[in-house]
Image (cartoon, rainbow, N blue to C red; front, top):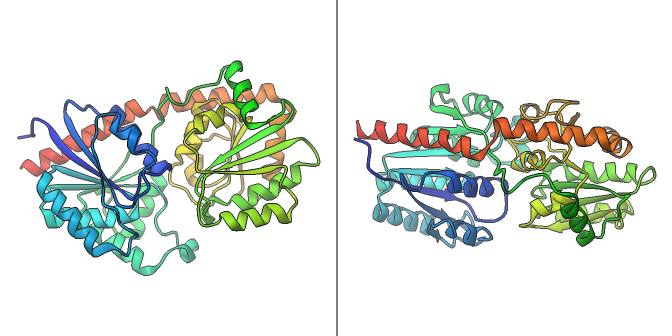
Length: 384
């Protein structure tokens, strides 16, 4: 018999500002808290979103791990917590939380474990970004400890089948959703105020990108494209996010003499405000799952340019809801961006079509109902 109130522990590496973390907040906002009792556990100290989660009435617990190498004590503490809380489901997101959560849940006797996979797992063309040990741990715990996996897109699901050796029946596709209240088109007044706060003149083409400063996000190509644009139109590139490549990207900006054109803003909790100021959102990634940042830009009716990879093709229809440019094509990025400056009316129409598409297919409220159905299915199976 299904429990009257399902106890769910959500486990994630951190509560920093990122796509997976924002998805967690969105899910918690829309899941029926009369039917589900939630707790959030995060491994590392980063907790920028903790207050937002607790404001929803969801308690949080930080394990305080110094890093993924602090695995023994972290695993012991997590297992003890799960035994005390006795959840019906443990839902993990992001590599460290996936591996620790799956193992701890198995040790604690949790009936069901589900993991959300946000990115393309272990692309062989990008093997320099991960170790074989990491892949083995992820694949083994997914196969033997997780009852179901959630892929955020069909390409991610297909990669899990291929690289983890999982049957397709154990993987369901539930895309990342967008909070349509948080991300909505800016009024003229909001746009003017947001641009004033960032020091953006009216004639400047404001380009925004959001994401961790890591190789997969391909910020270097966008910075180089900005260098191609500056002689043809006033431009300002705003890069929101932080990560291990920050110093390298700052050096690139200086070397290309783009200091007056490129701003590395660091981690920001006000992305909707940045979107209000932007004329264009660009995501030049070489690898993605289903990027929340791109969906939020489209929900805000900001025109988008994205790299032409399978994951982006699932949400961007070239020429209709945005533009697609081959990865590493700096000239193509520059031309697509300048087309927005040349014809702002047509660009606004693209932005409006993008929002309509997201409203129809990626509403957080709608997708939360699909997640609830999966929780109920897992609990029903565990009761039999």
